[in-house]
Length: 315
Image (tube, rainbow, N blue to C red; front, side):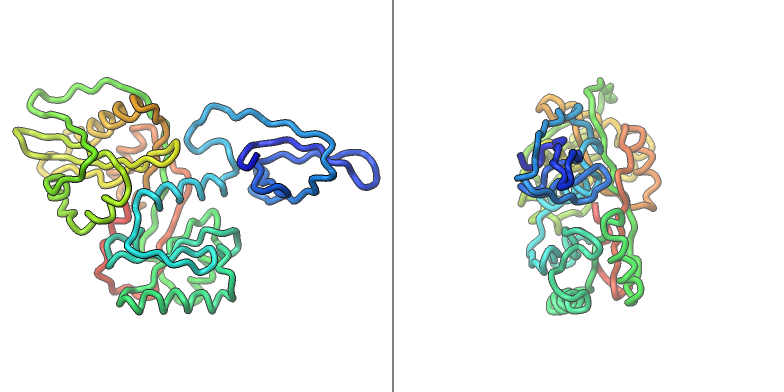
């Protein structure tokens, strides 16, 4: 029953009943629509009923805290770093400074601090030591809806904002695309050096090849002019590395490539997609909104050191 949404009627000690509703997280707990964890004694159950889910739509259904963790699992499992070390429920990730997402701490537990399972000061010290042993700056990725208190504590301790972004989600439908006759669309399960070369992405090759993915491409006269990657986990697909060659921008190619990829995904029965985008990337925001994406929640990267040669492209 874990994960199912139930309404449970419990006997009250003084007589009568009380009802609780939410998604089951264990044999004795459920999480309600507000994200609160409710405990109950199974011996006190008078009756229960499963609430059948509504259509599986992006950004709907489970409490937001559960949806955020589901999306972060999607991003983590489709963008696998070189190293992972756990401090309680904090996931410390390192990949030789290749992208912020693969070189930052992701708190995964409950609030207020993500369950590091030790004193906050001690946990932060472990983070600093982990990254300094690798000659890297310590960085946290904080999902503000879950761990605003942790973000405020880090700010008090001198951690500064490095990048702010949005997680966006969308439901996709098949739609016809009319490409210019000189442009062709390709899709492959392999990440070729030619695909990587368009945006000088050779440094990420090991990361992207650690999870199955589709690599979509637009070509003109034999040359690659636009690329995007999609990687599936469960009922979701994570979109990364959308890039159009500078000389071909402003021709609607980004939207066309994304829609052609979406058409392939719908043929595989996939209808939910998610991505991460830098808050300052206004052109990308405009494109994603036009494709039907909506902002699901915000995140922030915080660091102790502003001087870094990390690749700031977290997506």
